[in-house]
Image 1: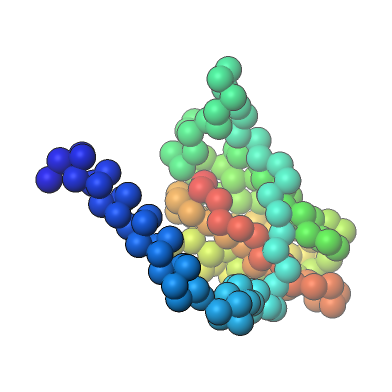
Image 2: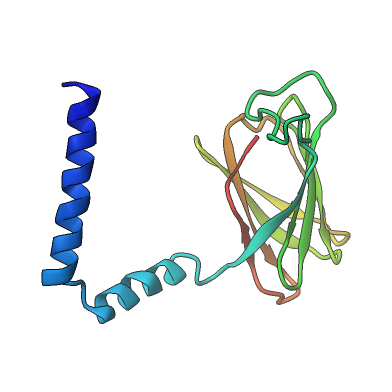
Length: 157
C-alpha cells in the first residue's frame, strides 16, 4: 500500500459517510441518548477543572514535556469545581502533598494506571501520598461536609 491508497480510502470513507447520513441518518433520539450516557459516567462526581499547572511554556508557546520526572522542584496543580478547589504539589520522587480549599476532611482516591491510592484529608484539608508512579493520574474527593464530590480530569505526571 502507498500513501495514495490511504488518501483514496479516506476520501471513499468520507463519501460513504456523507451518503449514509443522507439516506439513513442517525435518529435524534439515539444521538441524545448517546450524549446523555456520558453524563451518567460521573453522575456521583462534579468535574474539577485544571485551572493551574506549574509546567511552563517555552519560547514558541508549546507546553514543556511532562510525564518524565526531573530533578527540578515539584509540579504544582490546581483543580477547581463549584464549591471546592484542590491544590497539590507532586515531587520528582512520586510524593504528593495537597490541600482542599475551603479546608475540610475528605476521603481521597488517587487513581493511576496501576492501581488506586486511598487516603484522607485532615480537618485542615491537608493530605499526602508517597510512591505514586509517573504517568496518567486523576483524583476523586468526597468531602465529609456534604459538599458535592469532585473528580479531576486525567493529567500526565
